[in-house]
Length: 156
Image (cartoon, rainbow, N blue to C red; front, side):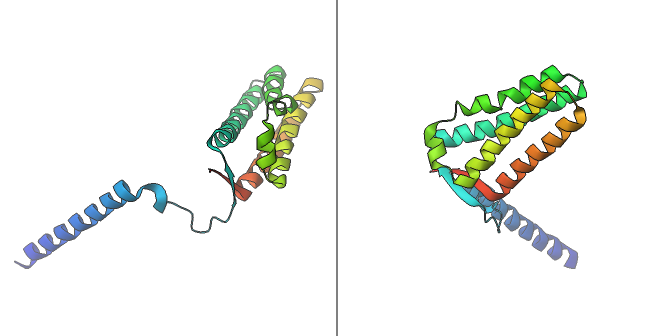
């Protein structure tokens, strides 16, 4: 008799918890999944500029991956080709209004990233050294980490 009551009560508690979790997931969404101490600087862009910035960051990762593949295959041409895509030449395509809206330090980190990509392309073209490219990649990813720890990009 006692164990039957415990079983019924535990089933009721389980059902209540399940309903509460379903409600949270269905109606409150990911708003509850925010970092409690996220004190990064929020940079708000119009949706088209935010999409551009996010696309640029994804391309950074793709280029870094292509550089790593070039290193693994001992292929300096692959490294040069990939790094050049995000080097100085890519800055020519940056919209002026993006530069006007970005905080100075954020712009400086962005320019620094493109400078490092260019340095990777230049050094791999002149004298290909895996150790040099790896050091440059470490500097590049450190630049990315500092930027992502400092800024958070959102839409207006």
